[in-house]
Length: 118
Figure (cartoon, helix red, strand yellow):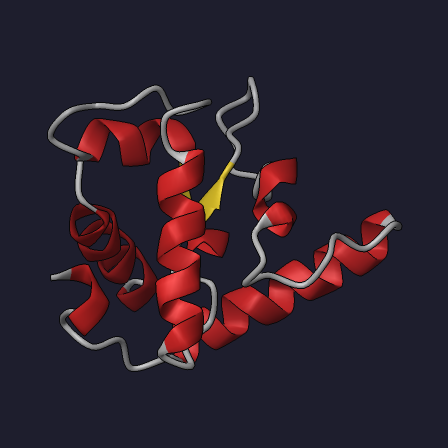
């Protein structure tokens, strides 16, 4: 699985101003990595590439899906990436920070590719 494949899927999601679950992202990729373990490092790497290009952390679009099928927020590993601000302690602060990331991601004019992904 290449970071470019993940980037391509997430840019489509961003352009629709939407979110995607870890499971749906995994299913959209050719080799279907484990959505709970196999995506983490790839998403962190992609956030680092975005950060170096002065772009917001696009993996904020990848969220947990509840048992009711509703999309929630990113998993706790999201804020462990060096390209993402540390995880706020309070639930409200986490929601505000994530909402700010989503707004920035949805408003960004995403390039078709990034040189570091080639």
